[in-house]
Image (cartoon, rainbow, N blue to C red):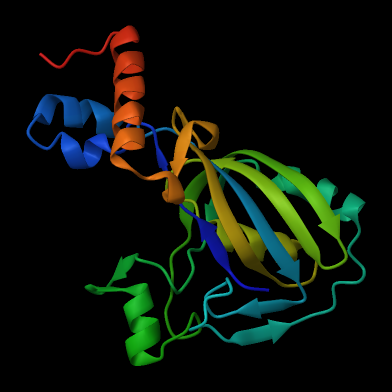
Length: 213
């Protein structure tokens, strides 16, 4: 199964490119992205890769049985991950250690988790639900705070079930108050659509009490 990340531009996100001469507004806009994030993720049980996803640069590092896992098992353990918890980030991530990003250590120096002591970080999972499960494939709805790695979450869920798993696709459905339903798909990017999105978001921002003066 190919790995995919759906890419959308929330209405108003184009302000990031168009409002650089308005520091007050840009600061306000950035603050609107500081809330929780929601994702829809798909994963496959039975194997784990170096990148914890289906990136072509990754390779399979572990395999394990998964046939013993039922829908009930999955639903039973998910609440254990909700709330404030510790999570070890992936080796293939942008986190810096010793002046270099972890993915640089992995790709350029051939290092793995066994060679680097990656410190667990505190993350917050607000909501976690099983959307579907068919054989070795399952999908999750996730609402989490910043700094959470969905790849690591999927890894940890599988380990909790005495197996392994790899993320096969990821779609962000919400960022703070910006939702997927109110976003522009990339194929819809055009001057008219972008300016309409700007006007819509700006009107909502003004209605909510924002001020550019």
